[in-house]
Amino acid sequence: MAYMFLRELIRTYRERDPAARSSAEVLLCYPGVHAVIWHTLSHWLWNHGFLLAGRFSSHIARWLTGIEIHPAARLGRRLVIDHGMGVVIGETAEIGDDCYLYHQVTLGVARTSSGKRHPTIGNNVIIGAGAKVLGPIVVGDNARIGSNSVVLEPVPPDTTVVGMPARPVDRKLSHSATPHFDPYGMPCDDSLDPLLRDLEGLRAELTEVEARVARLASAQVQQRRTEQRMPAGD
Ligand SMILES: CC(C)(COP(=O)(O)OP(=O)(O)OC[C@H]1O[C@@H](n2cnc3c(N)ncnc32)[C@H](O)[C@@H]1OP(=O)(O)O)[C@@H](O)C(=O)NCCC(=O)NCCS
Image 1: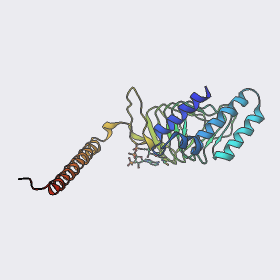
Image 2 (image 1 turned 30 degrees about the vertical axis):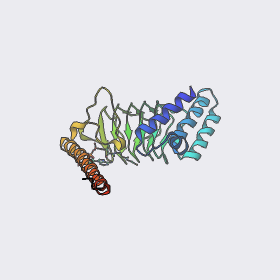
Image 3 (image 1 turned 90 degrees about the vertical axis):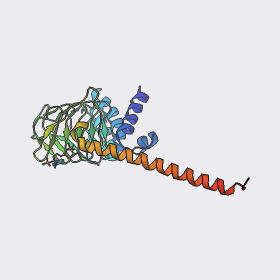
Image 4 (image 1 turned 45 degrees about the vertical axis):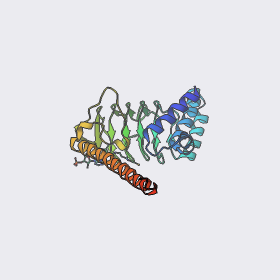
């Protein structure tokens, strides 16, 4: 069970972070992985009535990783916290599956109140570096929050919001049945920029042609050398 959990988490980092080169690197060098592992312990302690022990273990995790997650917070599966330093996830925050948080993200309180006071984040949401999501608002599935945004209003699904206070940017993302992840929250939909897609295609073809020319040139050089080495037979 613990092994499966760890395997899934490491695989997620490797799939989603272009900088992750090996499983060992992810396990040893990614504070987000350590924070989620520590949270599993803190959350268990908290839910079994060991409140101080839960708080204390989350405090140790914060000390080690720079990521503060309240032991009562609910985290979904395959959560990636990239870089991590300065992330704060409050007591009544909830995060769905497949979310991606960058450093200095705060899921916090807008105004002091009791009860549910932190945000609920849907599935497959990307929250850019330094963004603050405040209050008991809902961020819909597949939403993207720009870096340094301050989000005070609910965010509908498939929407990108930026700014302070955060407002939706014009376009709405369309998603296929199988949602895929784009590092840094860059466009999820290929049809957004057909010109760019064509340019990418041309670049790939050019690279292929260059490689073929290089192969032919080297074969020609090889052939000339062989001919020079061969004694004049007749
Ligand atoms: C929000 C984000 C996902 C938008 O990506 P996108 O869909 O490609 O959107 P665009 O770049 O086309 O920007 C759309 C508009 O929002 C603005 N915008 C984008 N990101 C913004 C931000 N963080 N704050 C303020 N405005 C922003 C753009 O200037 C543009 O404005 P315009 O329409 O007036 O020209 C992306 O900009 C972002 O912030 N990703 C997170 C990256 C991150 O945290 N990286 C950390 C790596 S260590």
